[in-house]
Amino acid sequence: LLRGSRGHATAGACPQSGLAGSYEIYKGNGEQQTLGVTYSGLEFSYKTFKTFNTAAPFQQQNIWVCAKHCIKEADCMTYTVHTKGTCTRSGGLRVHCAKCYLHKRWLCDWAYDNNRKSVGSNDIVSGVCRQEVDPAWDC
Image (cartoon, rainbow, N blue to C red; front, top):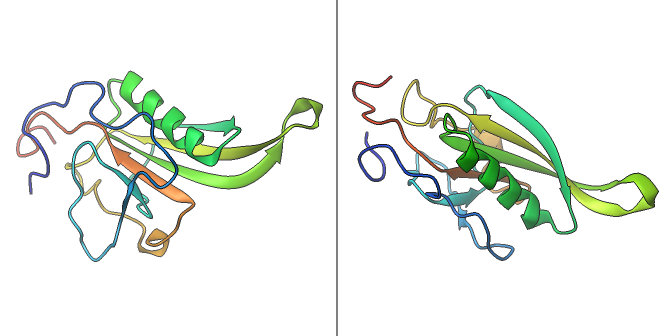
């Protein structure tokens, strides 16, 4: 079941920047997820330990904000971002808004399972930043 490199991933294992569409398209049907990859259409269904809203001039910037938060949180293994379209900030400025979900597990407790209804969505993106030290024993 091990997916990616063995051992605890160091901070920076998932991308923190990139152009729109610079992520893998998740195909579903049990497709293997890989440490350090960002996926469009993948929504982890595991419970979150932290959520927050973010807003930026471009949709993909919200994805990288979420990735950076996951990297800074030592307990964060994966993240999911729901981009919600545009919203209005104070002063009437229209920006792209999103909600970020951080997860404490990836390979343990079936945390790699995903919401099948999100496969193919361009508005839901997830990344795998870390994994448990030894998924066979660390769960």
